[in-house]
Image 1: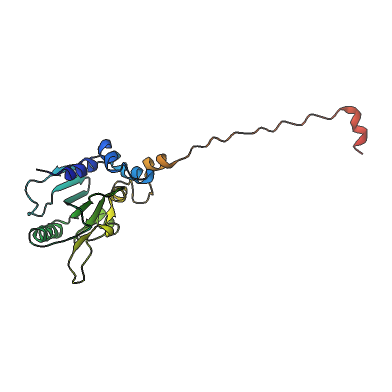
Image 2 (image 1 turned 180 degrees about the vertical axis):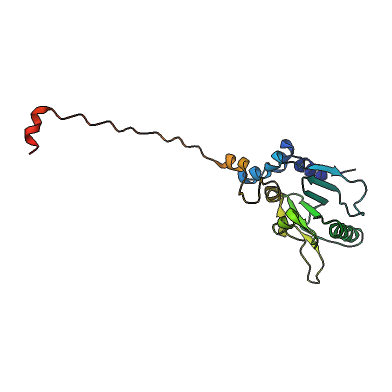
Length: 210
């Protein structure tokens, strides 16, 4: 059975306005506006049966030329170290990413925190091409321990609203999308001042012009 947090993320990626508002309730207006971009460019989100041991993660988000297998982790602690089953999941997702040219992601939700409680990480792979290769420069990989092993560290992840802002832009050249610009714009009406034309001087004042 899917956890409530997994359903929460699925609703956001699927572009549900209510889902986005729910996870950004305590965020700033700018953070909420960035997250809302997914409403205009939603993903098809498919829940994967099983425990993700086949490398597909818990959910798969698809749109156009983007495909993200996503493993969802929810913890009260900021750090999560892989071992046993979780290490096997990581290894399987990395293998799938390498073989299929995909970008597997981890979505780490921290319990009991205000603001954007989700952080996004990617598994480091070497076969990304096209837009995925471009996006890889903006999404952090799993940080390494002192012994060089990948792990989750919530403080080093990409906030979900920033991730959505990156993957839902209309183009890579543009900055904030039209939706964000409208959310931040301040409409100012400028009153046009028309200067009156000067009235001609009376004829009797012509004698003083010399």
